[in-house]
Image 1 (cartoon, rainbow over the protein chains, first blue to last red):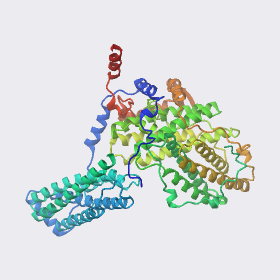
Image 2: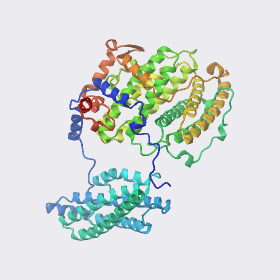
Image 3: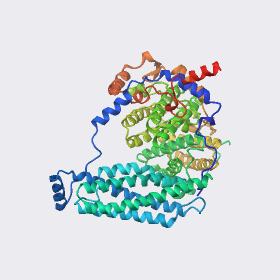
Length: 241
Length: 399
């Protein structure tokens, strides 16, 4: 695997077409007169669809009697427990996907020699294991609340859409360690913010025991973030200098 | 490289084998490979799919050819896979779309200049102006949705500007038809029609598959709109083909079409790794032709030379910028419309087409909405400041 960027025959810029350059720009500007005027329809189409849209889906109704009781009890307290269920579903999906993301990173690191790879593999494997532990932690929390941890909640679904690019970057055999670390950094920044919010949400919903567990996960995620950020910094600076 | 269809045996069908690793081999570089390498990949993927499509239909209605068809189709499926998997994963669906439209423009422009039948050449130029306009609309979408410059994909070979506006491409179905070529048409004419039909089919299928992948409602509308035009183009080009050809005649022409195109790819490919694939598949197609010629003799009791003439292949598609030709066509023929199978001026267009598209466009036109006020600027329209060029010129003149 080639683990460094290089100067080469990149053809994407207009400077690579010096003979056509000015003529192409001139032609595009002149001919655009035959194009449509800006009349606000771009915005109008979007606004109409947004106004008419239905949500991506719903939070599943708790499937157990215990769950129904919990939900009803929480509602009686003026809370909306489906928000917590939805965010727990999101966190669980994120940690599950994160486990796979780190497994892909471990494979990439295994194929690279030591050159310009500051990643310490045992620590990387440790992060992967903690992601899985967090997944199980949230799964159990959902079960305790009577929710179905095998369901995909709306926020879990949307988090999956967000993460598609990250997985594409890390699993692409052509990306360097530094490029993959950049994707992991995006994941960890989002993950940290996600746990912060979840601690607050669990606490506000009166689930202090869960908030305590999530606080520990947040602390560990902070370590992940620091490690990934440090590796990325080292990889980029080592290569540049 | 001179090939006579009757001289060379090619690789025997039974030796045409693959591994999964070969099929999912190293992709091209979106950044470093030449845009025409991507054009060739898109074109040949389209042709392999069309060969499969034709043979699948034949399988359902030709008892004697079933085994041969099954064997040929398996290899052609693997060929399609190996070719299509050359596109790298960093192409967003919209970037690949830009590649599809560039393919349509540059290949059609080359074919239009090669076509010996003036009426059919007009047909190529006609649809060329529509694909050219699609590139403009999709480039606007790429800029405004993903914040990307379409020129990163087309690499300065192809202009990005409006031509015949997409909102008037929507014709009533009968007005998509052309008069077909006759039995005595030149081999070149037959190869051209099948090439463009296959290319447009794949473009249509691609848009139909990826259109729903987009979240943006205007992108979903635009793909719906342009996929509809591509469906018309399949009819447009497909109706050029002589409907009285027998299925096996069509298969002979199909194999010759693949040979003709793979040869053009092999001759002009700049990436040695990809060129080796074109050469390998050229050899495979020559092997396929042997099978089909044998089938033709056994089933139809006819000489393949009745269809393929003296076996000499006509001039190949030129994979190079056709900028000047395309600009001439835009300047002279944008106002053309259809009335049945005839090309007419704007005012004489079939009224049924106008009624058809008035209905479709009655709740707005996606292609107009996406490109309102947009014109291509290097590095996206965020780089364009109205009057900045003039101000810079004035400042330079003053100094």
